[in-house]
Figure 1 (tube, rainbow, N blue to C red):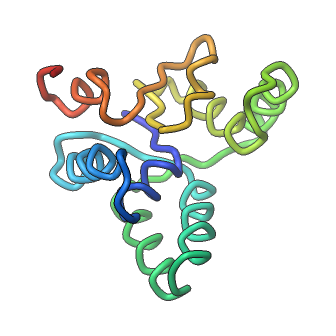
Figure 2: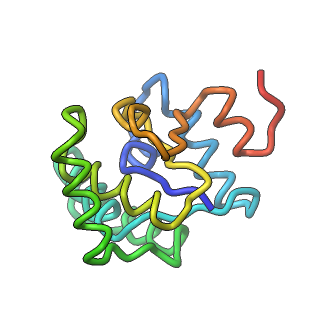
Length: 146
């Protein structure tokens, strides 16, 4: 199982961008049953927040709901995840609180990878971070690396 960060959802349905197609490939892989992926309710919430700043609230709510269904069952962040994330926040200057808790949650669930365009996740020991559009991303999708 892989955990998706907000960046994957935002780029997958966003405007033209270098990462749009690689993120769409990941979402298509999940929808097609080729990739087992999940995320947290907080990621879905952050996606809705970002989307609503650029598009209508109705559009943001609709897409967030679709992602919630697609990525269910969602991973629930518990107290231990929060505390581990706060420890990462304290010791890792490059991570904000949201990302630190998401990383801690992915590690606690022994996720195969945390997929994100955010390179700050790469600094964490014990977390496999995969950037969309890379050979590692192709491997997650079951494709031969380019």
